[in-house]
Length: 233
Image (cartoon, rainbow, N blue to C red):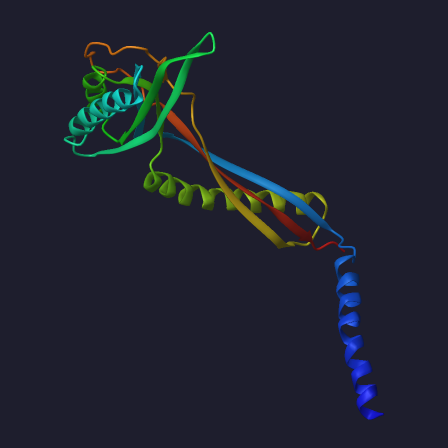
């Protein structure tokens, strides 16, 4: 009998714990106010990203692959000579060309990605690469180290702004003070639209002059939101 009673009470323990937790979660919390504060700073973009592609068309897919690979090897050999420029090959795609439901040939493309902080250097490199490749897009961003430094500076400002709002609310509601119940910090970077967008070209073009672009700025934003509990009489 003793063993049966012990087993009975042990089986009820989890149920009692669940009931207690459910009641705790549904308890009303009074005098709590949700607040949000935000700080931002405009920062000059210091990193340039450029995407290029080599395009080709041939009746024989093997000849098409040879053409694309030859152009890409040429571009990689030139780009890798530039110090401070990160170079990587992009996606490789081929697809059939049909006319009147008859296979007439193949088209394909392969991408090349460039990244670096020297805008003038990459602009000159792009001018050389346009002899066989076409520019798909160029955009700018804030480097990770610069962004982190700005965010760390803004976090302190955003927290001070949050506490200032909490004091304003407490003063207006005649509270003797407040305490922070929870708080969240989030960051983001709002970049401007791409200043350069090139159309896909069907044929190679002669080597062009260096590409002229403007890096522009990005807005680094730090947001603080949370809940404070007022000490009301």
